[in-house]
Amino acid sequence: MDIADLRIFEAVARLGVMGCAAAELHTVQSNITARIRALEESLDCRLFERHARGVSLTDEGRRLLPYAQSIPRLLRDAERAVRDDAVPRGGLVIGSLETTAALRLAPLLANYAAAYPKVDLTLRTGTTCELIELVRQGSIDGAFVCGPVVDPALAVRSMFREELALVAAPGVKSLQAIVRGGDVRVVVLRAGCSYRQRLEALLARLGAPAPRILEFGTLEAIFACVGAGLGITMLPRALVEKTSSAADLAILRPPSAEAIADTVFLRRHDAVATSALKAFVARAEQAFEPSAAA
Image (cartoon, rainbow, N blue to C red; front, top):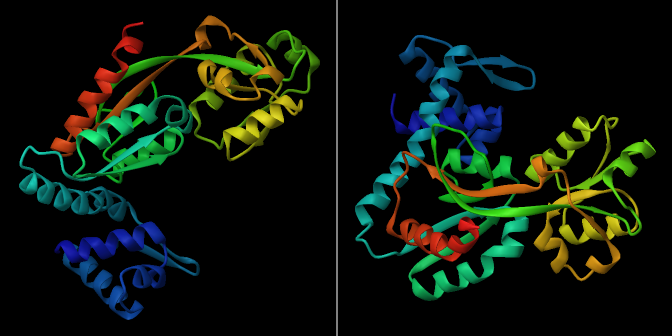
């Protein structure tokens, strides 16, 4: 078993079809099939169950997969550690909630880019669940997400607190009035959005029937649909008040248990903290210090 074998094994496990793995790795399917068979023989176990739609992992394959997934990250970390001379440089990929990026990050990113021009800074947005998984995989260096996050694999730093608001169509006086109406609809980003999860939990606590979910891909679409009376949403109050359509929305304060959300920055415990990442975290803590202390 060598690194090349584990790379092939990981691709087949992730894609579920040997032909797709062959295409991704720029080889032929017969080569992939032969390498997987040789790996199974060397380990004296079956790693995949073959079926008409492709392959699926056996119990032995599932136990091997985390090690195969860690190899590319370890090699990347090793190279970065050797090249790191305490001067921030090279690539840095930061994840963020779309709301955080729109509301909080522009000054931080601009100041960081000006201070460290040798860093190739990339921002990727997503939901809390998506970003946590990307950090776990090592696909991004760190991310701003909605806390709390409890994961022994992740180092978590509190950054700031966000006051949340319930947003409804003009004329709506309270969430209770919406719940009493019976037909509750929520206008949200895709599954995995932390604010969406908080709103659904709040509605369940108030005894509302299962809400109808209307998913939209942008904040602009959410504000427009809420203003038109299609449903309600929950977002940071500062972001809502900043939008040009705020005057055409009812902005309500949720119950105290859901009124505040902590935003945290997380990265992998065992990943190399490059000089570029250390400098970014230091500047983020400095930028958000007043908010974190509030």
